[in-house]
Length: 250
Image 1: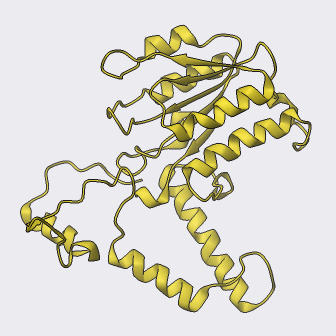
Image 2 (image 1 turned 90 degrees about the vertical axis):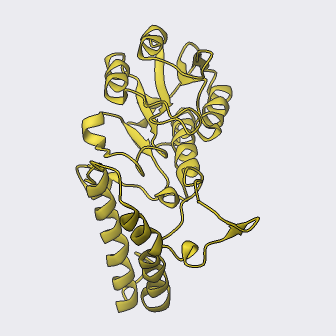
C-alpha cells in the first residue's frame, strides 16, 4: 500500500522526479515558456522505467496469454498473472482472482452494467439471477458522476425497466452523506458513485456509503479513477462490491 506524502517535496526531489519522465527531458514550450503537465486526471505521463518495461515485454516476452503450452506462452502468462497479483496487493484485494482486466475504467463499468443486463435476460451464470432488475427497482447515482459512470446505468434502466434516481448536488457541485442517506431505500438495487470527483475534488465517504447500500442489499459500484492514483486505497476496508480504476491515470 503506497504511503501518503508527509511533507512537501524539495526542489531537488521535484527535479529528480521530473528527470524520470521522458516527457520532461526536453521540456515542451508554450510561447517560449516551460510547460507544467497538470492533466494526469485525464491521462498520466509514463516514467522511463515503465516505458522500458513495456518495450522489453513486447520485444522479448510477448505471446498469447493462457493460449498455449510453449515456453513463450508460459513466460507471458507468468508476467500477466504476476501483474494481476501486484495490482491486487496495491489495492488491498484479498486474492488476485478479484482483479479483472479491462480495456479501461469505462470498459469495466460498462461490463458490470452489461453483466447485470445479461442476468436479466437469463444469460448469466447460475446464481446471477439475484442481480436481475425490474420495474420498481432503483439504480442510484449522483448528479456529479462522470459519463462513464452514468451512461451505462441510463442504458441499463431503459433495458430493464428499473428507475434511475439521482442524488442531487448543491450550488457548488457537491453532494453529501446525508443526501445519500435520504435517497437510499429498500428499492435501491445498485448504488454507483465516484470516490473523488474529477471536477470538484469531492472526496466521498466510501465506507459509510457502502454500509448504507449493504443495509438494503444494494450492490455498490465505485468509480475510483481519481482516487487510486493519489490516495491509499484498500478495497477490503472500503467494503464496496465492485471498483474500477484506470492504469493509464497512475
